Image (cartoon, rainbow, N blue to C red; front, side, top):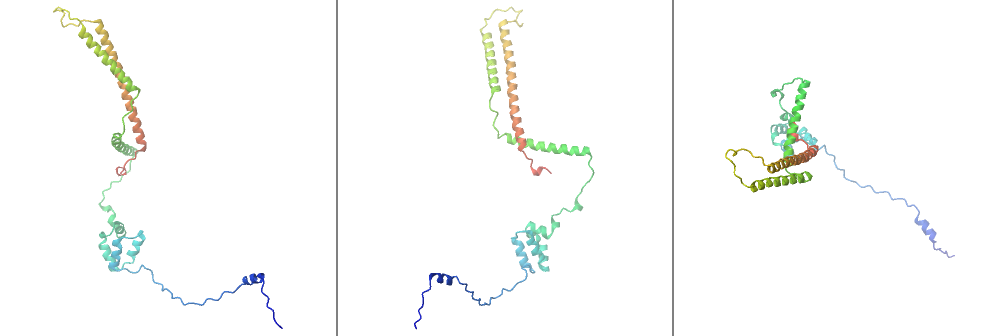
Length: 244
């Protein structure tokens, strides 16, 4: 009897491909173990500690403390004796007293300050600040432009022009007067000329007008610079070196 083998259908093939195949057990492999060493902060000899401190490549001060704490006795003696060769932050850690003012050499007088004393201190402080501000303002104001011209300047120009015309008018009138004979007894005496008197009064009026216009210009200048000074005061800061 002949056995007939049927060709598997597509569904049988899909079912077979989805069957779970257990994973093969991994073959153990001998991996060499890395031996653990002690901390890197071991005892440093003089040469090593000196080189590390001289380079000063430390990120923070804790590393400096680690080097000093782990220096052997010979290294520590050398480091302390020659601490002046290292950077300031290392010297401050090795011997902080090098940067402290010996109090026994200070002459300090301590006393209680009364309200009057405090007021005197505050006044002196304000005086110093104002003096410093005035010096800075004097330098800063040299870089500022002058006040823009305005109405007061126009009025001053007009008053000056009228005053100059009045003076020219008087000069021309005196020069145009006919010369008359004057008796010796009348010479040296002031003779009233109505027209000359009128022109002189006009000149005095023009002088008053000019003086008034001039004061207006000075007031405008003063107001302009006072405004600039107040603006500068709002942004001005005293130097820290002079606050002690």
